[in-house]
Length: 350
Image 1 (cartoon, one colour):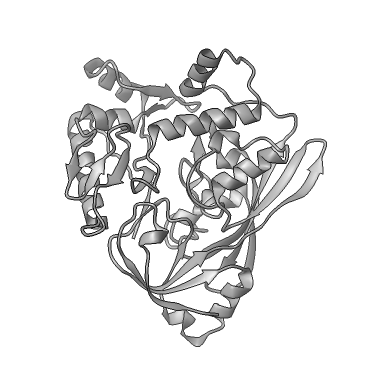
Image 2: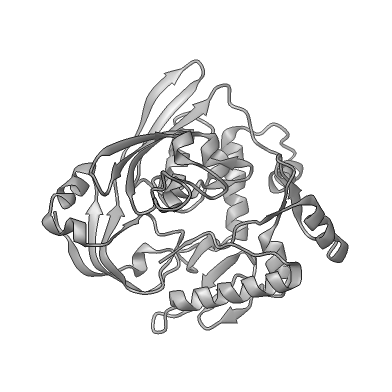
């Protein structure tokens, strides 16, 4: 198959950061990958798996081989009295896939509408929004071991899902014995959408939509439309302003830590979690430190949502990954100094 040389990655990362791949191969079918792995130089060349590039900060040119996943396909695997089992190729656009499932009459993914990226990247990050995480609807996935070339099928337990976390974000040598970071390329993902469908509405923004519209019992399409409207109002379109979505994870603290913060900042936005911990709104913490709308170099904080860092560069002077990370570290320092909280970035940094 064709391996392209010195390919610009600027169109392939939603931040719009200018960088180049030493080599790039487009994986449209698992056989494409197996063909590459059969080549003698495979074992000595570093490789990086690229999905939609929506959760990525590139800090320099990428050496070795970039594997751009473009595997297509959507289908209903099985329907029973208990639900629908739906499958998508890893290269499918996530939002388009969600819209397609609803159009087919298979609800369950609507709360995760308009999350950028591909289906294959969704399990890596365990994406989630408005009360639903991918792990709540996940069934299984297929992947290829990038060392042995063996096919893998993993269930939810084997994926090790956590808050914006999975086995695919941990190296094999760390405490997770099955760490698969850099080791596996996801090819297909399956989702279980249960019957009867039940709406997930316990989220402030959705409750506000119910009040505004007077619709007390929305269907799945209505929730999908609400989520799309909410996200578009809060988050910049990467096609207009480069960004990687929410840049920091919402931190969790003990009730005692939360009480201490509330004593100093009574308006802090916080949510009790089932395990007894308290989740704090990272965007509120950043805003409280005065960062909303601020710019460092060609990287800035979005004026409508402090949780989002944006590309303020121009075609002549594009934003660099170094500028993004300099801004991110400055924000982390401010939040730690004021609240004693260490914010953790969501995007993958390479």
